[in-house]
Length: 142
Image 1 (cartoon, rainbow, N blue to C red):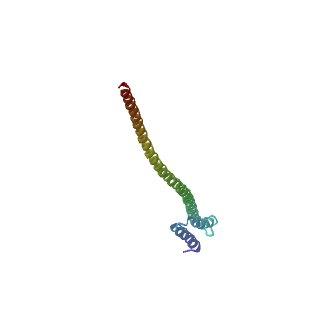
Image 2: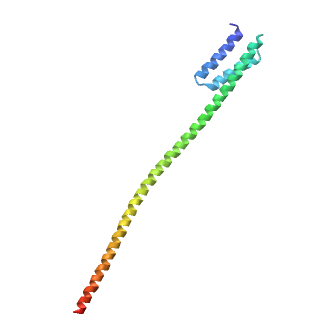
Image 3: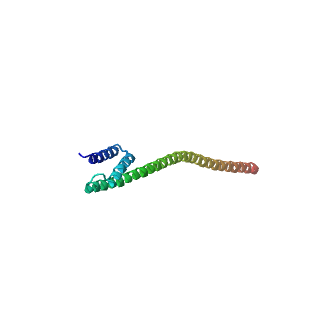
């Protein structure tokens, strides 16, 4: 293999290796070296240089897209984590408020029971007063 081809092949292998490792920025840097080489070919095969240049530019476009997608994914992931924390906080507050509502309902029930008992006692007082008044009338009539 000619030195020019071997050097290009080594760049392509490093690009491939970085991609497999998920190191897309390193792959892009390595690909840029290959692209610069293809723009200034040292050999005489223009078709080979054109193929390498097109391949390198295609790689660059795809790698930039992958890097951008990773950054977007990272932002979305952080945003989701923040929203998850907010949701957990809201759930905790909801649980607290639900407990307080239960307590209030228990108190309202107790209050309703006391109001009913109060009405019953007031009626009993009225009944006892009526009995006392009738007893006094009976005594007065004798």
